[in-house]
Image (cartoon, rainbow, N blue to C red):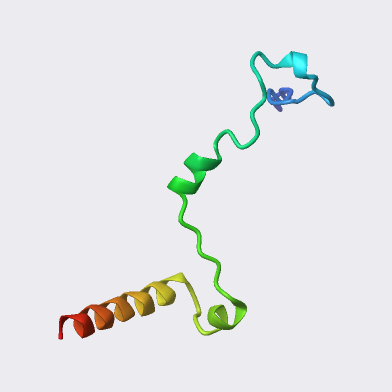
Length: 74
C-alpha cells in the first residue's frame, strides 16, 4: 500500500505586505558578514582555460608563493 503524500510545509504565500514583518526591513543586513566569511575569486576566461580544475589552480598558486618567498629572502 502506498503512503499518502503529505503537503509541502514550506509553501509561501503569493504576496507579502510590510505589515507581515515585525521590525523594519533592512537591505543588505547580512552583506558584511557574507563578505567576511566568503572568499570567492573569479578567474578571467584565459586563465581558467589554462587549468583543468581547482586543485591545479591551488597547486600553481602555492608554488608561486614559495618562489616569491624564496626570492625575497635573498
